Length: 215
Ligand SMILES: Cc1ncc(COP(=O)(O)OP(=O)(O)O)c(N)n1
Ligand SMILES: Cc1nc(C(=O)O)sc1CCOP(=O)(O)O
Ligand SMILES: [Mg+2]
Image (cartoon, rainbow, N blue to C red):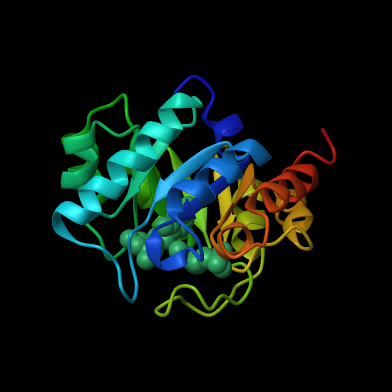
């Protein structure tokens, strides 16, 4: 990935449980609205498994490929390898960072969720390319999310001189995205703000405006 920082600006995450119309339609509209990266996260009540999950992932990957949007897989390393995805996102409860890095190789994008300075240091040492930090604001999407922590850790990492790309996640909308960027994040990652929007296209556009406001 030539410029990961740019790709992280408007990072859309979803799977079928997050969508009120077909995931392909939602993704296509979000791309038209200006998202810069997509994560396939097939998780939560009613999530597809097995071949149905694979088929949906493949369909969404093809849409991303047609529009030069990098395609990241959440949690499921085997699926990412099967699809030759552009990268993987893992959390602290998933496989260890260095093992995933070893399995996907140096060229693929590896995102890691971090909640503390210690986790950030370890993830970087083990091969993370970017951090997902959250929940910045309260979220109803991830049932096992930690309490919201605002932008404290993002600010702290920048003050301490960390230059690794960062995205904020959790409860982010076009109304509050600007403060995440002001805190030092390179981009925002969202599920509901786009996937539940009447118009995913307009929702992505509005987020993009906020993220690029000061550029
Ligand atoms: C960009 C981004 N940041 C954080 C997460 C959360 O990952 P994780 O803590 O592993 O939780 P699940 O998403 O797997 O429920 C993410 N997916 N993406
Ligand atoms: C997938 C995820 N991870 C989080 C974390 O804090 O690591 S919060 C979250 C859910 C984000 O969904 P929404 O944009 O709908 O709030
Ligand atoms: Mg995970």
